[in-house]
Length: 77
Image 1 (spheres, rainbow, N blue to C red):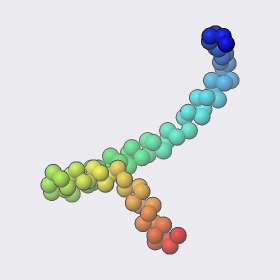
Image 2: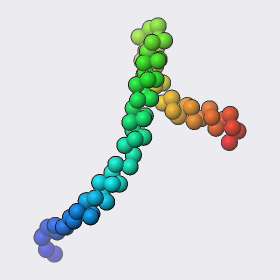
Image 3: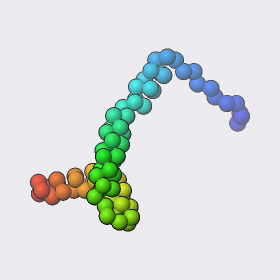
Image 4: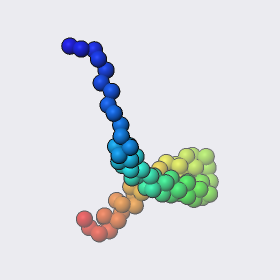
């Protein structure tokens, strides 16, 4: 067996396709980030103790999953 390293050539077309596919989920991540910040601020404003604030941060991380769960339960799916 040969220990030669295979170097693939990249063309502008390949790079354009690669970069196009990498940018596909950026809007979802940004929307989730803003929603997380908004939920964290809401829960922290309504917390009365330190541990209620910690629980609020945890709730801010998972509120989209809770929303979908309750929506599906409401729709009886």
